Image 1 (cartoon, rainbow, N blue to C red):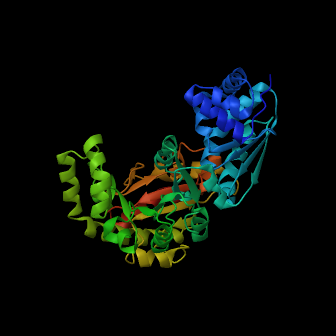
Image 2: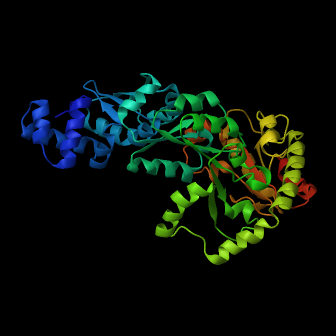
Image 3: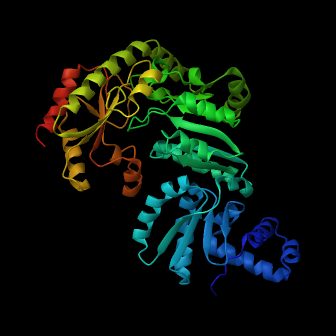
Length: 443
């Protein structure tokens, strides 16, 4: 029989019964027989899946009208496919209404739901915004994380935050460069803001000092991924950040010899929060790999200065090429956050340059072919998704670092098929230009 989705009060009672295995309390609360509660719990578990049903408690509202109200956009995206499959298989509905609490969530969900609806042609999805952002507190979520949308394409990062859900931690997206969205996303239970600056591969820059003020006013921490700049160019802790994330695999080592990472902060945070976890979970480098990173740090400053200078020269040259539609590099005056980058990054744009190869408008397949042609034509540059080496590397973000996203997700994040990312090393800039010209001149 078609399942009539219960209102929130009943859903919570059923969830409690499923968790405790006792149906008496729920039966008394709802004034029905224990047998009826037992049957409804089984119906819900069959309809939603046992794990999904349990995770819905206090996070999603199910109403008699068949409307699904998600407390957070990430909940909606993670659950929509499984939920819709069950709705469609039952043949009871061809219309699904998704309501979110903030317009930020609406903007984030809209392109993703549109892409999903294309595959489910019999399904009509409506997206609504309901309630005031402060209403989020009534969903009793213990911990909340806000982070910039432009780190979304980094699948390992987003999966990390999604995995937090099983610990009762809610995470939400905001447009990283828009401070009003950060402020609008703050809730009483927000404990951490996470930003990457500059972002990969669009090199978007966020105002660290302003984010630190937003976090401090809310009693939250600010974590900044400083991979692209390293401490040689940018020191987020000087602008108020509490935690700084580094990839030692990249510039800190500088020669692609180890896999390493680091979280830096003040002594209290490190000693109280991270050292106990490292001791019990074993998340530490081997002595040899640690030594390799330390040796790399000895030349970090001069490497970053030299590689950044070459990157600026390459970016300026790319801007003059007719075969290039757009160049992304914070050191260019044309970059939307150029002034902010120069203030935060010690007057340097860093060593990563991204650009879009020209192609017929509205033809992503042609853009992809042109990008591949350019990359395959190089002879000096190393074709790899890694970056930070003394050797210049080149990659196609849409098929490597962001290849696991759908095309709709890439488009929403600004990762187009014609985009190419070059991580400039210590090669002579004229050699890099000549290598790229092999492909550009034959487009």
